[in-house]
Image (cartoon, rainbow, N blue to C red; front, side, top):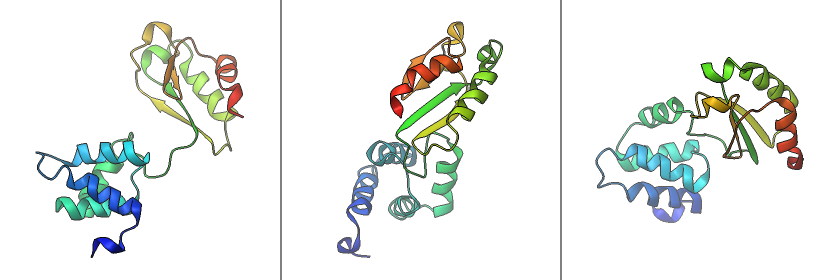
Amino acid sequence: MTTESFTPHAQRARTITEQHLGDRGPLMPVLRDLMEEFGHISRDDVATVADVLNLSVAEVHGVVSFYHDFRTTPPPAHTIALCRAEACQSVGGEQVFAETVAAHEGRDDVEVREVFCLGNCALGPSGMLDGRLHGRLDADRIAALTGDWR
């Protein structure tokens, strides 16, 4: 395949991958760079990475699908990541998670997901709202913090 037939996205993915050809164990750095560049790793990106690194598509897909930090679809506008580890569960984290999921159900612009320990155990339930750490969360506080997301 000639480079003229690549879309700008595909060409950029190929360039990013080729920059790591001399690295030892280049797959993870390539995937991190693709996430940083595009916000997700598409099926076409997986094929490009496999082609450039001389790996099978299954090998690359296996790594992408194993780590939850690698997305295969574009990210939503907002993300709520709530801790589901023991310390946060012991202070109501499970209820906060359930209420938050229910409050944002049906919204395409908000993703509510679970994480396991943000290192903020003393201030649980903890969570990250658009990448910013918050403690002592409950449904009302999350609603107040995300009120301008509508």
